[in-house]
Image 1 (cartoon, one colour):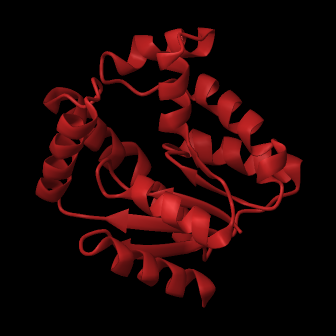
Image 2: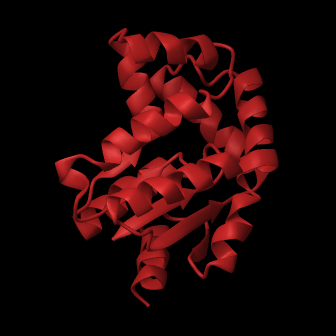
Length: 187
């Protein structure tokens, strides 16, 4: 199973990605985790990414596309994967389509989670307090949510038109949300 999980910051993508990856026996690949790992370890990639994340900006497509392609080509992703946090815009959809064609691994489905703006802000503020994430300032959160609405949310129409979109309400009990996703995917 090759899946994307999409939705605004704070909707529960990371939580659901981990549960779905375990359920289907595939790696959950989060671009956010990849970048945070590199930033924490002060790698060349991490230092370059830090220039953007410190300002609440998204990492440029060229840098993101490279790390995603390398990750999808790894051995543990040969039989499937769940990609979280990518693609974020139309040019990344084109890049991902090219990567998947080159790797001979077509995308199966796109899980789209959604929740009210106020719910998202509350969840992100809680996460920032619990995890001490420096990239979750109110200003950075607002900027990322606005960018998602402008650049990423419209991508859902692309996947809907391809018959790949599975839309799920991201509010409620975590296990119920996962059950709804699995039921929709297994249909």
